[in-house]
Length: 618
Ligand SMILES: Nc1ncnc2c1ncn2[C@@H]1O[C@H](COP(=O)(O)OP(=O)(O)OP(=O)(O)O)[C@@H](O)[C@H]1O
Image (cartoon, rainbow, N blue to C red):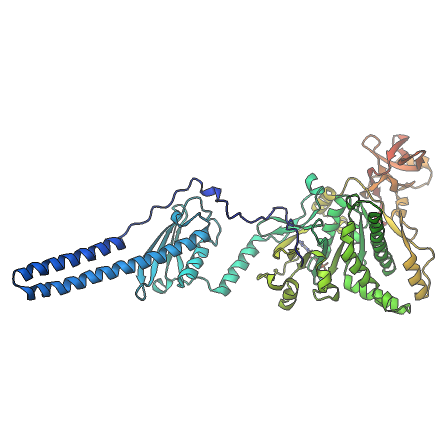
């Protein structure tokens, strides 16, 4: 992928500045080295002393006319001096080995330099210099040794440096002292070999990543950010999709049941909470129905005919915005439009089939592919963002040129290694995602792929159906209180005909219009909110407040809606909704409630709660 703004997680992951010293060690003192035996210099000085002594004795004996005795004394003493010198050389070499090891460990542990460690190497064995059988490592109290793998990691670092395997003999956490041993002499287990290491790392990630994390309710700063949270990584850091990144679009990959629908629901909810309009093409028809009545979700197209219209309109919207920019508007004035296409490949195939049935040429057959390619390529410049979901990572849409336009890729579940290599290249993560729903590998721009657990976002329709109190509570907290974008429906100049060719043309010329269309079983069902009898007098007798409720924009109220305009009026039946002369921003609402009738002027965009007495929508 092309270079990318690394702002893709909530915690800015800027690496440490090599110039900066770690503050933790500001008050740490260099370690007192363990002194044991003679130093190499003391040994070398002793060797020189012994030579001097031997030569002096030989000279004295020679002067006393006893040169033979002098030679007899000289030879073993010189041999002894030679041995002392050799020991001093070996000790110096071993000190060099230990100094290099301390340097390496200082880097591994993160202390400023090797002087902060006391590495005491004992019981050297094997060869002239050999390797130590026991290593005692004393480190500063400031070192964070709390990770369960910390000591084993040090053993691995020593293994790497000395090419000798070690096992953790003892880790004295309070004394900040670690003892490593050569297991071949103690019968302990070896430092982990690569396979075991990988298994351990996998275990650590498995332990660290939870299996279900509820989507956090966005805070005010979250809502003004263009970072849409996707989930958490093993350190608990939120990982998100950054729409402001140079490549803005998002690709969600995953086999059936991996968690695509749950993740897409979360993305829709987050986008809506930021006041952005959301258009959804749900090729499975029922997967994302749960957000159909969510504030700011303008349309969930579930029939192929409607899906073709929505895709076309998204493309036209993009073209319109490009024209606006060309005529002097700035990109900052254009609010983000999020277009979700769930199960893109099946959708594109169905569009191609419909085009073929309608006797259209190859250009029509590749309509879905071409429109999406255009949206990927140019949408971001005018704040039109595409979220694509697919089952396969080797889809033809993901050719090089399109991959560069995808800011973030979320691969849910386990990918086979060939596909993972194609997707991530050499950055391919060593740890495959565990088969846990919502477990995913995420790559933002050029950053390294990271393993995350995607947030759990309940399906509003399902939560209501099973009456899951916790999920309903979470959804209520996630629901935007202000509806800024009205629902849309597909408006065709003519009804769809029996002839595929005529239908194809009708769809290509269709539009999106505000409100619920006649064919939509949406707010039409609000009539159920009317009490029996039909007359407003009867309605005033008792306003029921059972059923389920949701927030809508005042402009969506209709006569017959059961609504709660504010705390003073309580639940009322809307009798009439009238425009106000010379003020297109407000509406006059006439209502009737248990306490009598009334009217008030309310902003069109204010969010109010309405109640459905029956689940007539589904
Ligand atoms: N982030 C998550 N946290 C916890 N559980 C999850 C998560 N995502 C998915 N699940 C569980 O896995 C089930 C299947 O998820 P989902 O319906 O999102 O899969 P999908 O990839 O959309 O499948 P399909 O392609 O068949 O539609 C969910 O019903 C839920 O129980």
